[in-house]
Length: 71
View 1 (spheres, rainbow, N blue to C red):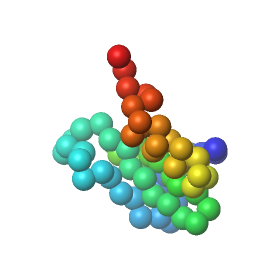
View 2 (cartoon, rainbow, N blue to C red):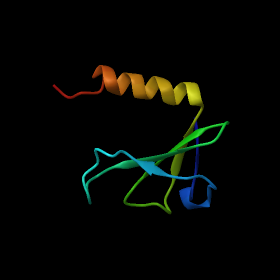
View 3 (tube, one colour):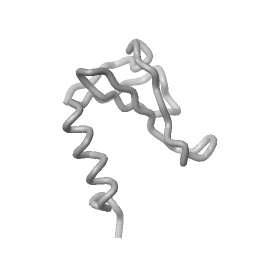
View 4 (tube, rainbow, N blue to C red):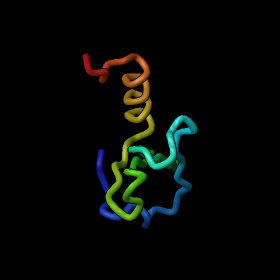
């Protein structure tokens, strides 16, 4: 995992979940063959995490399984 200081410098198409409510706290993702980037939708010029495609898949599966749910 690495990061960039300015997500807006990445030449990728950003997407937000269709389940995200307007104005809510969301993340956006964009991908290339080398990495998947994740940024805060409220700060598109701010930093972004860069994850290997396999690592991003593990994060998504963990979310779907409820691993990060609060009790």
